[in-house]
Amino acid sequence: LLESELFGHAKGAFTGANEKKLGLFEEAQDGTLFLDEIGDLSLPLQAKLLRVLQERKIRRVGENQDRAINCRLVSATHKNLSEMVVTGQFREDLFFRLNVIPIHLPPLRERQEDILPLAEGFLKKFASENQASITGFTKEAVRFILQHPWNGNVRELENTVERAAVLTQSNEIDVDDLMPNAMDSQLKSSPTTSPS
Image 1 (cartoon, rainbow, N blue to C red):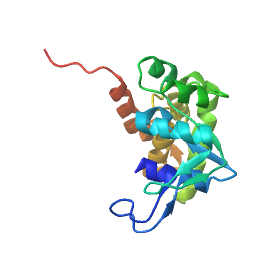
Image 2 (spheres, helix red, strand yellow):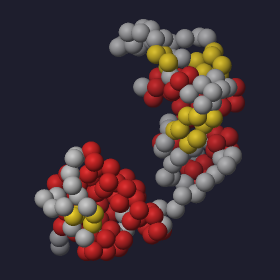
Image 3 (cartoon, helix red, strand yellow):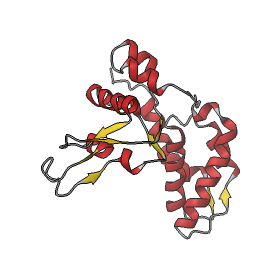
């Protein structure tokens, strides 16, 4: 399915392929394609991606014809690709092909100055989407937001603020509104102990 998403497919290429489909590479022609979690690609798909990057051609699933593509590729991952190369989980040649301009983005907990502006931006977005008159966060909520480790990074912060904006009964988000999601992530990141 991922191969079909990236490269497209011909009509009848597999069960359910009732018509031809352009892949993301073709849709991004003369533009930019962003691939998130590139470290999760299987080795066979890594080989096909490497071929596309080297030859600047794709082949739709179920076709024998190559099609020229021209797009910039931006990729991201939360995994250490250098370590994955050493363990054989990621192709070294693909790593060097992708690693042209690396940008390291530290986790949210290491960017304290970004946390509150992001939370406020998410709150404004979700209050507007839900037509809620929420004016902001209480002082206790701000303190919690700044002290929480945010192991799930920006996605966890966004989901926590969205939940609070949807469920709060007040015009300000309080720490109690934030706690359930945040506590779940904290529990998941902590080692579990079994009773003796």
